[in-house]
Length: 109
Image (cartoon, rainbow, N blue to C red; front, side):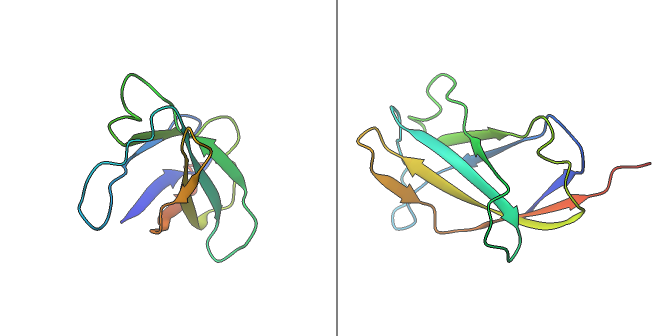
């Protein structure tokens, strides 16, 4: 699946439900944090990092909501990728293996 975004937008959100691959159980990361690292596809430099908002019980339920804002999407049209990283309350870090695909298209003139 490729998430589609529009260049220059300041309010899109994506939601990820984090589950264990082996048994499909929800990953509870309450008390911790979750971040999405965003970069140009194939590059090694992270352009920016989004922190997931903790609203209600969403972290307990394995739900991470990432909001793009400001000038983050004032980038060239093209393919990008993202990596989700969980930091548990103990400080332990777990990275989701699956890389997320994004396509940013130019806004209408």
